Length: 246
Image 1 (cartoon, rainbow, N blue to C red):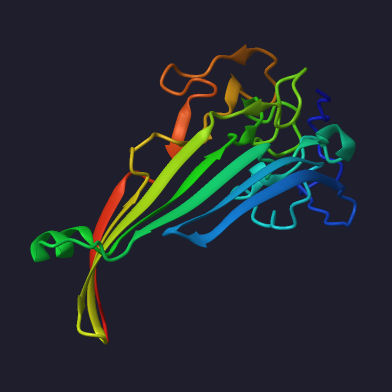
Image 2 (tube, rainbow, N blue to C red):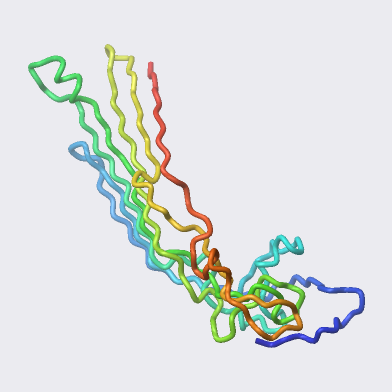
């Protein structure tokens, strides 16, 4: 890691932001999709994407000092040193959306016919790779005025990946028909049905530094270990609804 001089080149200015069109990015992907049209009450769409996204962090939204510091480069004088996996890189992603519909069931018993008929089961199953993140040093280790972008020496930008994500959303619909023009549908929907703890962000601080003049690194607090979960995607949610059609 290159450490900048403690003295600023222009007195009175701690940091000067320069925006220019010098960023590079590369996206390669293989996308496959399989569809079954609605036949015998069943249809589905399955999609899989294998991709690789690399860049040197082009982010034109870094405008607020402090709030947007993490969007910057480690070394603005060496843009290519930040070349690596993009923040948007999702290596594998699979989505399956099935729909199964039970129409009118022919039964001699009228009650059984009403109970078993007109059900619809659907869902969306998502399985994907985790998100990319870097091993950072908490504090302005390289003395460039930005304390949120300094990586651990010997590590690449976004060289780590959070755990895989599994989400299962589902819907069950029961429809009651009255005559030819009226129907009432009872809906039950569940998001993240199995209440899986899908990690959205992790602790990226591998070490800390006491001040810009210090050279010794410190370990993170036991309560915030490097790579440990920080925030999660949505918890399980269930909702009920009624729909009247006429």
